[in-house]
Length: 503
Image (cartoon, rainbow, N blue to C red; front, side):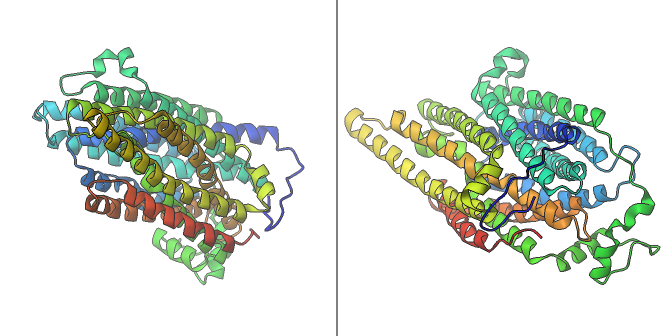
């Protein structure tokens, strides 16, 4: 598929049914992985504060994901491109990532219980041992997510062959099943599922903790089930070591030794060569992707916390009434995230039509970046209305501890739903373009997707490092990071117009 700058012509040929079935099956892995990721986004920021970690330090905990992605995805992509296992190139890494995921999730879910058994007190305050176990599990979970997702997207490209249309379709399906996993994750976070698993509630793990534990146990089962189906039913041809010359032209063009020589280029040499041979199209793609994620990540990091604090006026360390308001906001935020991913899922199925409607891929990406920027601005407006209502309640009722109005709640739901539109584009278009740009170059698609991930995780690291101290300057408010993200998204909308069409 070739995206034109001013027009878009849908591919008239129907996709091969066998290939389509394989793409759908591989894409279902995204549902399992995203199930756990949705739980991270919606529940873990409140959970860390239940363990006694302050709002400032929570942003540093979230560095686990970007740092692991910075290191793991390029390495996994590099080795999966040249893995000669009889089980295939991608599946061994997917299975290994699944095993790590199970360990990480169990550590997170049972962190409070393990910490208590190691000597943590039940009194309010930071629980050092539980927090340590939690952070270890968090690292393993993020490492496993990166080990699974990069080979999965590369496997989609492998199955698609030389068809750009199938590559785009595969990534659209991946985005759709990410939405399915998000729905399952956010729905689980909004429901009291621990009632069906009473053993999850202990002296060290209260009702909210037990619900988080239950949700993560369900995510382990679901992820293991989807990946088992793929490993069992999708066959990969073993990569012949002699066939490694498929990269030869790219390295010769970059001035490096050919694969036919006795010693193959190392991972770091490949990274250097890939950077030297990167086209202008890829550099623009990296910049837009980075700005896009600077726009998204603050909200994804603090959305439910924003609902609990700014919108509902609750406090994690306040009175019983303030704590209840906070948890009401978190639960409503989880429902809002469900609307967000439902929108994302629907939009991901109609991306080709949207590209044609807006006159090209760069116009679509630019438009959705501006939508993201406007939505971040609306978080300030909604917060202002909610705060004004609480100030009025002090005058009328003598207390600010009141639930926000129906209008504020509906505005929040609308905001979450609209954000699903740019997120659908973010989860599909950059990865499809990276696969298309890289297929005729010296680097493999696995490595190319790993390098694209650097344009995601490096901005996330910056957001994690800066947002915590920035919010502390404003009394723990989440709004400064949201405004910063909206500004970056607007810049991304401008730069997207410089995105050239694929060759």
